[in-house]
Image 1 (cartoon, rainbow, N blue to C red):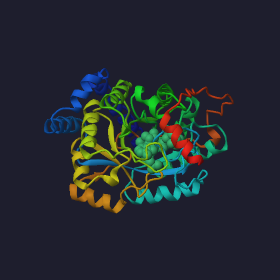
Image 2 (spheres, rainbow, N blue to C red):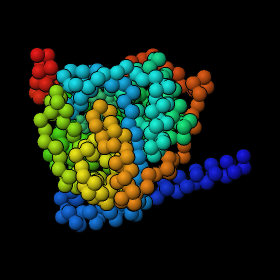
Image 3 (cartoon, rainbow, N blue to C red):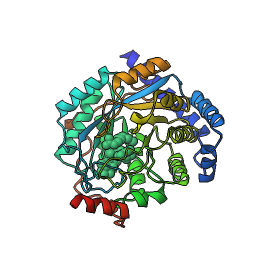
Image 4 (cartoon, protein in one colour):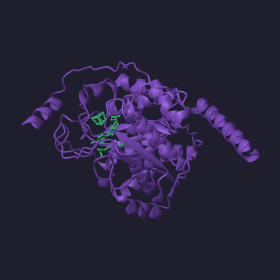
Length: 384
Ligand code: SAM
Ligand code: DTB
Ligand code: SF4
């Protein structure tokens, strides 16, 4: 008992000191021009600078491994131009209702045995609705937390009350990507606004849950938009604890089906720039790794990436085989990070002792509803 109290006080002190150092050292006022200048630095110099920042803030030989689990697939009402799960486009994915807690537990155990420290549960929802499905998600969170793994959810927009309920269940991280700059967002999605994303992140920030937010490159955006997204992430206070960098996976049937894949050089530059602008975040190599060689990924790790999504599937599209990833780790001398290396395991409160109740009112998320030509075309094609 005494040992537990001493350890808790020690952990608290350690986090307070880390927070103080973070507050005094982290820059939140990057301009787009400065970020573009970093991105365009001659490659060898950029790699050197990013690797230096990386070493100052992280152990360069440790990589955090997350496993994705699509707990509710397809049929989403949103019109995100990149997403195979939007109901309005005609893609070949197999939709599924919400998985059971038992199915999730079995998958989490598999992930744990293959070296993952985190399970990230994704649902193709616009926003969370209070009710039996959300209650089941809360039970999934409690179940995975009890397996001593970090639990992350990505369920769309959430209210402060829903964020509090997830925190109380033992959620470690909430993933909600800005995806691109505020300007370009209007060309990608018409069914919600950039501000909605910021509002959800704000709701998560009011709890103990860490924020995971990043974006996608390769959606036809300009360098200015990549920089704009990083400026927006950097201005969050505190900055996100993890930042997924996805390369667009162009899926047949979506408005972006014919987009060219991003080159490894763009990925390396984006990773290195993210590392410099967000020095403390875990930069996660996310969608697009199946198109990257081991050498390319090694360059990304050198440039400051220190997390991956592992497992042979992302949400609906393929991802490298876990055994191949572990061989790559061995080759590069990388070690999978232990769970709760950055922040203590959250407590998990059972449903019957919950302090937070369902809230009847409907949250007012926006519906900008402007037209995006390529999204309209893809929708029309699906109807033919
Ligand atoms: N529905 C929730 C939401 O949008 O926040 C959660 C799931 S959604 C699939 C999570 C993230 O996956 C998106 O924000 C986007 O960054 C990424 N994503 C989806 N489709 C992608 C694709 N084709 N290529 C790369 N990233 C993709
Ligand atoms: C994130 O930034 N990337 C992951 C996770 N967060 C949820 C999802 C990638 C999805 C890629 C397309 C698919 O598999 O459906
Ligand atoms: Fe729905 Fe999320 Fe896909 Fe957008 S990204 S269509 S919100 S599942």
